[in-house]
Amino acid sequence: MRDEGSVDDRLAARLGMLRTERGWSLDELAGRSGVSRSTLSRLERGELSPTTTVLGQLCTVYGRTMSRLLMEVEAEPPQLVPAGLQQVWRDERTGFVRRSVSPPHAGLRAELIEGTLDAGAVVSYENAPVPGVEQHIWVLEGTVEITVDGTVHTVRRGDCLRFRLRGPSNFHCPGPERVRYALIIVLP
Image 1 (cartoon, rainbow, N blue to C red):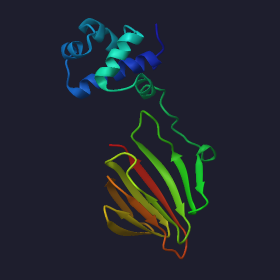
Image 2: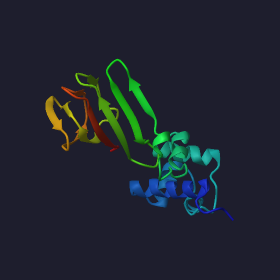
Image 3: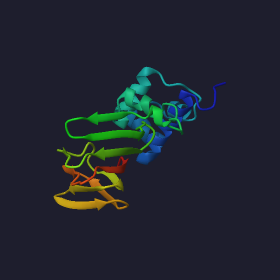
Image 4: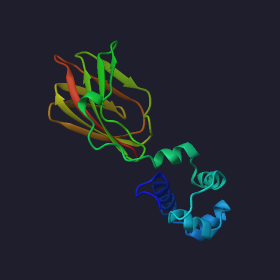
């Protein structure tokens, strides 16, 4: 008998989710993958562990690498991320500091970042990391000018700017003091 929440259990649940997200019946998935309907049913119920070959066939049908599929079934991330374990990255050239308050995880779509920019600093991005990514920027201290889709938005302490990012963006801290903001990123 397997432990509740084992990798095999999470994999079985994920395989079932992938099929239902596409609106496919077991028969349709069997036709697309070459894996029998009964095997698929047993896999999704967690009664059978997939072989490498079967998992490879299913990954092909779902358009995923095996490593990505397995990453999607990793254990849940910790609920508490202590401040001392949050990763901080500094760009000394621009005066930008980025703290991963809630780091990304394969099973989650959102992450929370704390950003600070020194007065006068400019940070530009040529493209969206993921087209259509949703972003919410809540300014905690200071003022920042954010350019998205060619429009400059002046975001002051307490203000929140939200948008879907599809192209370049620019962050400028006009000063006189630094800006500190919370950035919530939600994958499409």
